[in-house]
Each structure stands twice: as C-alpha cells, then as structure tokens.
Image 1 (cartoon, helix red, strand yellow):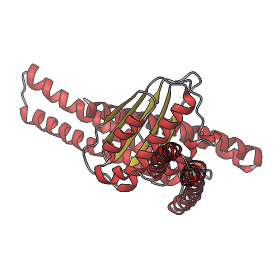
Image 2 (tube, helix red, strand yellow):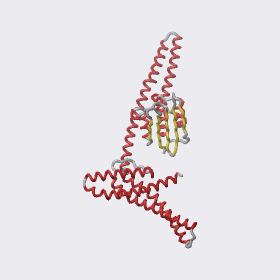
Image 3 (cartoon, rainbow, N blue to C red):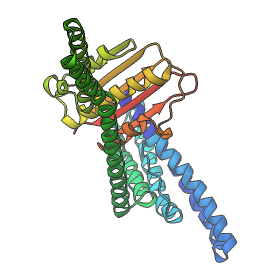
Length: 370
C-alpha cells in the first residue's frame, strides 16, 4: 500500500511538473523582452522566485525532496534547465498512457470481439506492455533528475556545504568549551560550598573533642563529627556522580537511568527499550540529557510526574522527557538546557524543546549511534 501511494505521488509530481514546465516556458518567453532594463529584470526575478517556491513545494510534498535553504539561488538558471525535464516527464507519462491504452485495447479485443487477426492484437498488447515497462523506468529516472537538479542549482555547492559544516563544527566546539568551563565552575562551587564546608566543620568538631575535659561532651562531639563525615561523604559522592556516574561504565545506560529515576524527587516513569551496546559518548550524552532535564523539572516546572522514553531505531537513539508542569522552558534563556543542546550538537544530534505556556514540556534529543 505504501509503495502504491509513493508511485501515485511520483506520477502526480511529474504530471504537475509537466504543466509547470509549460507555464515556465510561456512565462520565460513573455518576460524575455523585460530583461532589457532594470525594472523588468526585477519583475522577472520576482516571478522566477515565485515559480521556484512552487517547484519546491511540489518536490517537497510529492517527491520528498527537501532543498536546504541557501542565500545565492540561481532561480532563472534553474527554471531554464528544469522545463525540458518537466516536458520529458510529460512525455514519459504520455508513453505510460499510450501503453495502457494499447494493453486495454488488446485485452478488450481478445475478450469481447470476434478476432480475425489475433496476431496483431497480441503484438499490440506486447507493445503496450513494453511501453509501460519503459515508462515505469523513465518515471523513476525523471524524478531522480528533478531532485538532483534542484539540489545542484538551488542548494549550496559542495564547497559551500563544507564551509557551512566547518562553521557549524567551530561553533559547536566553542559551545562545548563553554559547557566544560561552566561545568568546572559548578564542580568547584559544589566542592567549596558543600564538601569543603563539611570538612571544615568536621575538623572543628574533632578539635573541640580533643580539648574537651568531660567524657560525655567528648563522646557527643565525636558523634557529631561522625555524622558530619557521613554527610561529607554523601555530598562528595553526589559531586562525583554529577561529573560522571561510574554505573554508566559498569552496567550501561539503562541501569544509570534507573538510578536517576530512584534519585528523582518526583515520580518518574522510565521506558528504555535499548538492548544493544551504544558508543560511550552517546550513552554519556543521553544520561546527562535525562539527568539535567529531570533536575530542571524538579526545580522549575512545578510538575507532578515525569515520563522518560529512550528508544533506538535505525542507528538513532531517541530520548524524550515529558512533564506535566507549567511549561515556558526556553533554552535561549541561559538555563541548563542550552548546555544540553551544545552537548547533543557536538555529536551531530538534534535537540528540541516544546514547552508552551501552561505545559506540558517535552524535551527531545536524537543522537546518531554510528
């Protein structure tokens, strides 16, 4: 059923392309005299741009060809090169209709007419089948030519694409460095404000216990020092967990996410259907996306529950975190979501945030596993 739908869309695209080719050829002949002076050239460029947008809509909706946006588009050259291909598509469809007509004529003559020259009917049917076969091959080739021409003349060249890729990698590298520096400052702050203060208090309690003359007072101070050491170890373990959870290396992503669910202050429903080993950077990025998103939900979203779904399909790890909070999350506001977006972008992934006012909020990350 899906293949039939795709074939129908391709045929429709070529039929519409043939009509547009005639329209483009006629428009070109009418606008050709206007190219002699600047206002005419501007009018021709505007008409060409509208025709190109119509072509892009046809290619996108019917053939699934998406041309990446690019500033320097050769619209007039594209339309000049495209209309012969559009007419070729119309010729191919005409051959398909002719072949179908021959085949139906032969079939109807064989079934309903008293034949006097059956050999001619058989040859006509075979000719119809041959035309249909050639037209089927031609339809696919013309559709492929349409897509290649659009990419070549409307999209960026290979050099432009490489320059854009280099710029993207440079920006991603800069963002990652910012994330690393922010993470380092956060770790230093946690150590200074948490663990260090605990250790200072522990040292003071031990010092007071050594100076105490009353055995009961000494025992009470040592008990407090023991409690303080337990709190310091717990906070140190928390800091180490936020740097990199050891369970991620030992037991994998599922177990690490189960630990996040256990530590979550909100009810968290986890669905992880990943049963295969993943690259280490992908597992780490997925873990931190979930952990940071759950932390943000607990702090800012005023939510009651959190749903986490992690799936793997066709070489892509898909992570979705949904909460029933108040919404309004904005990655551009300097929150932890901006750091997650940079972490995902460093792996050529895609990070999305859908958070309308009033909720719900859905945070998504698609990470390639190749």
